[in-house]
Length: 150
Image (cartoon, rainbow, N blue to C red):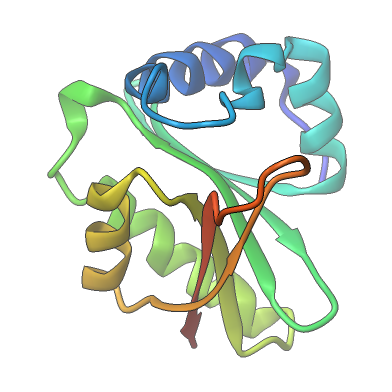
């Protein structure tokens, strides 16, 4: 898939604004602040980027990465002004189709322990918790893995 580099700065802005409310809530801090336009361009060369756009402005996005046994859903972001409009559900629906088209039966994601509203959203969209994990240097869980059969 050829990357559309013209959209990259807008995706970076969307991600930064959408994940801003995590600052001070999660430990360790998000690595998103280190994300650059060049890094997004690299992601777009190796992953599938799905977007929902209002006119030509992205209002929601997600990156899909093929794993050996699933498609990993990463960096799901919805602009605050467009939350609760069905944008996340549309992205998940498209991701389900992509997952099946790639011959997989599972969508997988990770979310931070502290972000209970995300746990509830993903559960509402059909995901169930399958594991917990911890970042290097931590003795307690810092993230949960959720999966959805498709």
